[in-house]
Image 1 (cartoon, rainbow, N blue to C red):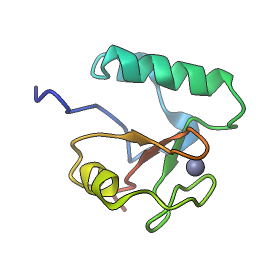
Image 2: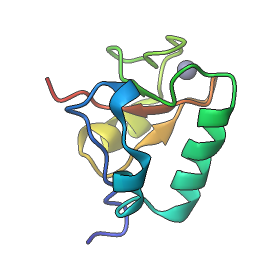
Image 3: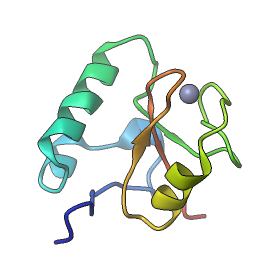
Image 4: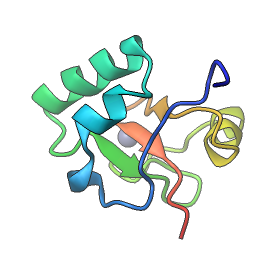
Length: 90
Ligand SMILES: [Zn+2]
């Protein structure tokens, strides 16, 4: 498994994200981040990209971060609101 290959479920709606399943593939720091976000203010921890922006707060995501997401090399946390942003494949 590549170092940055983080397992996400873009085919699911954000609310259906299965933390137990994801824990098998998600590196610990990201999982801890996910759990922290889940307990925090954001109503959902995962949001798909909305064009060039975070799907939660619509703050633009920097290009190099979006490219990482689109290449499925990584997921990234929104700099503005802290939710994890992923690429919805459809
Ligand atoms: Zn955001």
